[in-house]
Image (cartoon, rainbow over the protein chains, first blue to last red):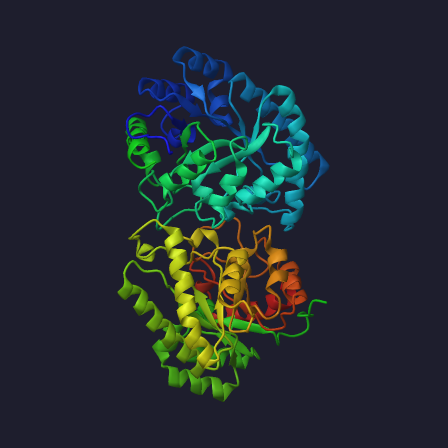
Length: 289
Length: 289
């Protein structure tokens, strides 16, 4: 039985990228708390801008908790030094996630080395995927020691070149099975509807994931037309994703955590007042998710 | 052993959308013939603009042949009348493909009804996929009678809402197996690298397709960054797709037909002189495909 979200917003979390254009992170925490939003998922650059001590203080003071921490990953590199630097960076991300008491560190695994700067260093996506496998394997030791689960986020195939070469839930779960065959709880997935809604195997793969692999659930909407590959995500209800159906599948598999709103929208929501955005997230969480 | 394309361009075909902004179809045929390009794949609206009689005449006069005909499909609808109209339209497409002696009719199967006009009539992608199944099943009878193979083209997942809800080669082949289990040759796939290059299962699914399901092979390139979801395809060699590797897989599976260049590029190639575009296609077919 899918949870009833229509009466309150206790299961709403705000990924802080949603209002990143409007406010710094400490203000975002206060604005969420003032609206009874119980959880956020912050980005590392937003944390760094304010200072992790100040962020931890605002979280303590308001009682706002984390639904995840964004992000680790970006493993592929064309040199051993590059791969080593990625591992170091992921260890720091785990430590920061621990400091902020995040339930998981979300991994955007990376694509072809250099591609995010428009200068891909090679075209071998299979090699990038091997780097991801090896990078997560190496990171997992530190994550386990720290008690910080890693959530692989499969990204939409349109980001395969420059952001993440893990592009379906099936592929992410294959990786989980390879690296954590005992389903220890230290490795799972973040299911973001924007990335996976199109997948004909989605329902089956969510069921396969099960409660112990489903570490996060992200919502927004797919607009038609979509005007920009990265920053034209829609508010829930404004696009074509059957959000309630997908949430039903996730909850049938045992997920009972937050529904995290993550909207990158340079053309629309980032241009509106932050309070309007948060109030709309609350309303749509009730009516459309 | 992958074919050697470096010495000539006998296996080059031009999808006529590549120079649609520059020339009408009769001129495209003449320009291709003048360069020793032996095949094209025209679009129905380009044929209609010039008249199918005139197109057939220019093909006969120049000896240029077809590597495919674009396109049938667009099956999903929200009413029985809409579904019937789609079937009628597909029958006409088959007849025109026959008139022009195309080796196959390419199917862009359609997405959510109304979405291509920015007005999606529902959000049930599973229902759209059922419409596609039923539409191809109904069309297949006419196609078989006409001796015109249907080539399902899986489109990139970023087109799932508005253009095609068949989004992986695996999904397309599942449909082929369901509707043509005997592999009669009347139903197969068009493999366009732009749509499938990211797929971690691509090599395996190409092998599964085999010679009798591989009806067409399309090339272009994926640019980083990609500035537009529809019309920012790259010239072969300018992006991140390992074209030779994918061609190797296709040929290892038995494909020995044309390599068809299909580039939608409002930002670049559609702004250059048509002769420059065709000459570049020839050069890149030799050096990058």
